[in-house]
Image (tube, rainbow over all chains, first blue to last red; front, side, top):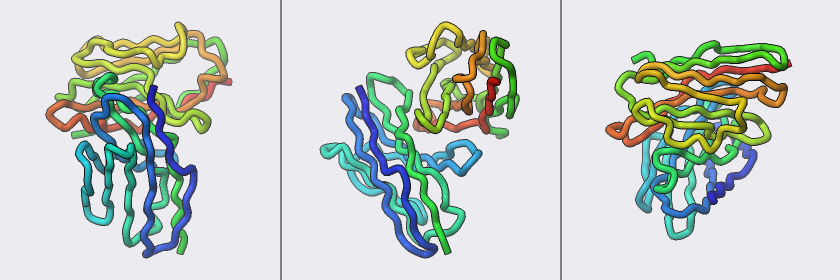
Length: 111
Length: 114
């Protein structure tokens, strides 16, 4: 089976840096995705990693270590609008293009 | 592009009634996914289609749930009869192999079964 763990909640202040961790267990790993979901809205795609290393996209970066079954999402220069749930999702060869989502980390950014 | 379009946005119904949720994927996308999201269980995959053919329906909770994709631009998720425990937000998403399989989600249907 597959298992994905992420912290339930995190808090941070404006301008700070926050790292949201995700650990996973799956066979036939074929990619890890991060999505952002504001309350009452749909998940929106943030980043995708399939090889080890860091992918940077503006204020957001995502890191993957396949040998450790570990990823993190790094958010820099936090803004109030970054308050949202961040979902880690894993794809495996056995599941085709389907994604298995973690339960999400709710990030609250305060001023 | 208009993105993935779902209807209705909100649905309130009584236990035992039939509910039909609708989805129009992004034009040109060949994969379509139905998810259910609750506080307790998070975002769960119910079923997905490739080129209108169901590929994996192992997430469909029980026989009361059925999904169809009669053509490339339309899919339905039907619950009959509905029960209070079906109350959740139902999302539809679509993707394409040429787009690195990134899934794009619709705005969701918030279903309340009384």
